[in-house]
Each structure stands twice: as C-alpha cells, then as structure tokens.
Figure (cartoon, rainbow, N blue to C red):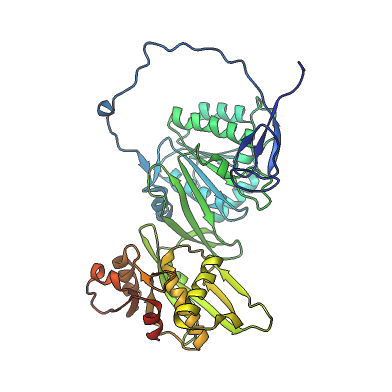
Length: 451
C-alpha cells in the first residue's frame, strides 16, 4: 500500500532494534520491553567521494595532551581520570533522587569560581526550584546561567549564541527534537537528542554533562541505550535512605573504568569521603561472632569492609538463605564448600550474609571473609578485632591469589589492624611488613583453624 506508514520496534531497556514485535528481547533477555515507533525515511542522496578526503597514516598523527579542568571534587576527578576533558560528553546515570542534580550543581559552583561559563539546562525543574537547591549548597556567581527548556532546536541556538565552556542537560529523557515524530523519552528521541549534543560538544569543544534516569519499571529509555555514544558513563549508586553515595565509572575513554568515588549526602549537599575504609567500619560491634573485616580493591583504591554473617537453626523444612551486598549464588557456593571441605552441616541452618553499609561487592577476594564470618557465627567464636582477611576460595577449598596484596596489607596497617589472613601464595609478593602479623593459608581449613 502506498500510504502505509513504516515503523520499527525498539527495546526500551537496551535499545535493540527489530522489524517486528517480540516478547523477549534477544539483547538483554528482558520481557515485554518492545515499543513501536514510526520510522522517518529521508531521501538518501548519493555522495561522490571527494579527492580532497585522504586517510592519515598513524605515524603522521601528532599527539596532544587532553586539556583537563578539575571539578573541585577530588572524588569526581579520580573517577574521571584526573578531571573533565574539554569537548567530552559525560553521562551521569542513577535512580531518581540519588543526588545526580546536586552533584552537577556543585560541579557548576566549583567550575564557575575558576572563571568558566556554565549553562545549566533543566527540563524537569523550574528556575525557582533550581535556585532553592543552589542556595542550600552555597553561593554562586554570575558565571552560571540557567535555562528551562526541552526543545532541542532552541537549546542548540542558545548554546551557539552564549558559547559556554560547559553545558549541563538535566535530563536527556525530557529533551525532544521537532523533526522526530515520537514522544519525548522514547529511544528514538533520546538517541537523536544525544547525537545533536555530541555534535555540539565535539564541534564547539564544549564539555557536556547529560543526566539519565533509570527506572525499575523500564518505562523510560535508560542511559544504557546511550553508553556507546558518549565518552564517559558514570553511575551513582547507593540507597536513597542511606547517607553515603558511590560514584562508579562504567565507561571512560580518558581514564580507568575501575575507580570509584565515595560521597556523603548532607543537608548542604554532597561531601567527599576521603577515607571510605574508616567510614565503612564505623559502628563495628566488639566481641561479636559472625563479623570480620575484608579488603576489596576498587580500581587502585583499597576498601575495607565489614562482612557480617548470621547462622541459626531453621524452623522450617527448607533453610533460608539471604545475601545483601554479595552475590546470592556465590554465598550458596561458599556454604557448600564449607560443608564439604570443613564438615559443617549447613543444611539445617538459615544463613544471612550482609556487607555493612549497604555497599555491593562482587570481587572474589571477599570469599575468604564470607567463609570466616559463616564459620564464626556457626561456632559462636568471635574473630579478633584486629584481623583482616582476603582471598578467593575455589571449589576444592583452596585459597587462591588476589591482585595487589601489598596495597591491601598497607591499607589495613594504616587503619591499625595487626593480623592479616591472606593466601599463602601472596606472601612472596608482600614480603615482610613491620607491625603486622601475616598468616598465609592454602585452604579454608587452615583459615578456620586460626579461630
């Protein structure tokens, strides 16, 4: 039919494109996430290759250092790789209410003090609401300009006219392009808006920060759709009801993707936590069974955490297992290793494992701490307060090596811990450390014998 309107189906979770509707997305395996959107097919004109366009040889390309500007927040600079790169595009994602807008407003405050001009564009809040939050944070100068607009054509015109050094888009789900027929927040609109902003960032050497919301229902296209388009992807993690926030780099073309930044939410904004290990260990109980300190690595930063376990006899036929902050299946695996290699009968006991503070840790180096906490709770034997343990546990009960053991030992010593249980193969790497007793173990039976 001549007047038939062509359309395409997009997955709202990952952006997978399909010619027909499907119940399950082949890309992310989520169910009922496909939506139909009209496809505007523009006339494609053939363009002949110009003789002036020539490829460049690798040896002919001149290397230049990226011009970076510090944000005034050391934790954010660490995650970004040393600061904000001029002309880059940074996506900040996270749950609603986690503190994304507050963080970017504090960045605006610090950048403006250095004489840079910042344009803050909001599609969700009014000018009065933004000023109310700004007054809570502190004082701002006239280098910061605010704009409440969602039309991308008008926004592009304002940016070209004012020529700011940095642009904040809060949020990308509210922006829309008049040339796209789909509704704001759809996958097509979000992709088109990001593409326009990317051209502005690269063409005019303007740093662009984009806020992307993540909803549990998956109704709005999340920032995962845009990860391949931007230079850096940052995720704000943490419970809205807790005081701490963790900023994690998922993608970074100008730095490491393993660094994290820790912040504390207060009434006047976000404050940096320069020593997160000490912050996470506050309130640790004394002489309590099932509690042990583990050391995990987040990029180049060691992080000491309290691993808690509670083992109690079950009142039902099937024992209950709960894991908070660690992988649930990993806890079941470690409990099976305990039962098989050490002889603990865990089948009649409920087990609850928790990382104090609500932080999530997936590094295998926490395995040994989980084993020690479970055994301590089962035997009702408290672990010495000055003990730290780390190591990966295999199915045969062996304790395997982990990365950067010396850095972990030095962090534990700095915070006053005197005994460290670690894989025996790591002793050669660590060597001798004054004031610290190093106990190398080959398997979990040797580890639990320390108790």
